[in-house]
Length: 167
Image (cartoon, rainbow, N blue to C red; front, side):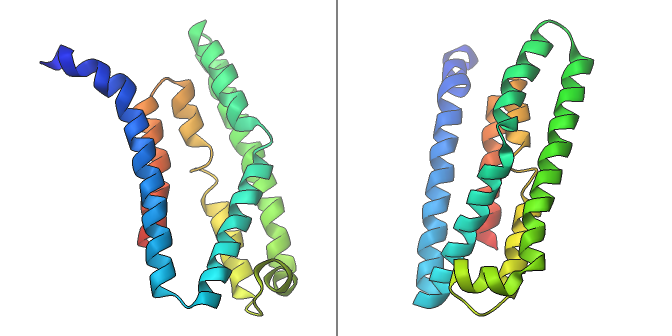
């Protein structure tokens, strides 16, 4: 029986879990839209999209590089070099994210008014906290993919959706 289910768990389960993650994002949007006023939902959506944009820009291709280079280094037995690459990429990503997030701390009122259509500057502080707080969530699933731990990578990515849904 176990050999019969092995192809499902190795190929289909990660795809299924990705779809679960998309579903959780949809559920979050429904819950937020129903429980917030129209203007509050707009501010939250703008802030979340700003976080996603900054996280994407600050990646600088490091996540894709981790998958490519770490997998190649591990395949030829150079585990120490692979670990150095992971550490370096994580330090660079964290540093770039901190620098990008620092702008929201230095000019909170400007970003709140111009990018999130609110006069509440604490929203800019939450954007900073989210950018810094989710550096690991936007990096370590790629490390797991490089190590061919696809199911764990999907679970790590979907945990972000669960945390977002709970908050």
